[in-house]
Image 1 (cartoon, rainbow, N blue to C red):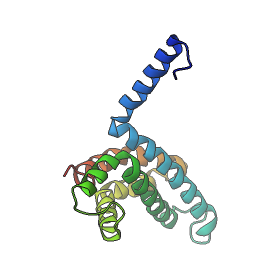
Image 2 (image 1 turned 60 degrees about the vertical axis):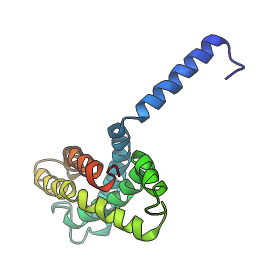
Image 3 (image 1 turned 30 degrees about the horizontal axis):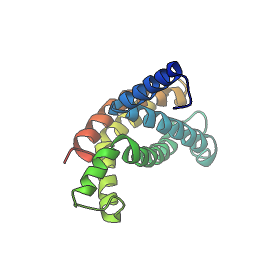
Image 4 (image 1 turned 90 degrees about the horizontal axis):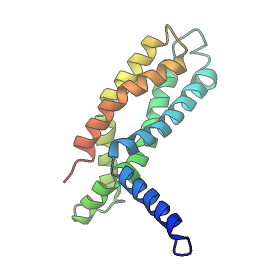
Amino acid sequence: MTDMPSGQQSAAHRVLALLRWIEQFRYIKFGIVGASGTVVNLAMLHLGHEYIFYAIESADKKPYFSLALAIAVATVNNFTWNRLWTWSDRVKAHANAGAHKVSSSPHLLQEFGQYATASGFGSALQYGLTLLLSGSMDYRLANIVAIVIASVSNFLANDKWTFKRR
């Protein structure tokens, strides 16, 4: 940045400062991860309902099995990115405190278990709302509505339990 004129340097510094400031807001990071999980969820839901489970979930039937598959795959996606980015400071602080190595398998499995449990209420809410709403709208739109509603409980549960301050 030293080769830039001072006005451009100032603007670049302000943009970098703004990005650092935004990164402090964990819920925004959680929302970005959730958006990626929504894409994963919708892709798996569509593939499951239209192809994998089509014989038992034809277009006129509710997506019971594909919805369960979609939620499971999206949960793994979201856990991975939330651990690596949203709550990485707490994961690293816990590892630096000497409790576990960041990559230790038993700790990772325990953490995933906590994440899945903490997200369980939101997953159940998402599952039930999607099935309920899919009677009156496209199952993919119903799933998006359900995901948005369930996301708040998922954030709170994981912030207070899975990735709590230690």
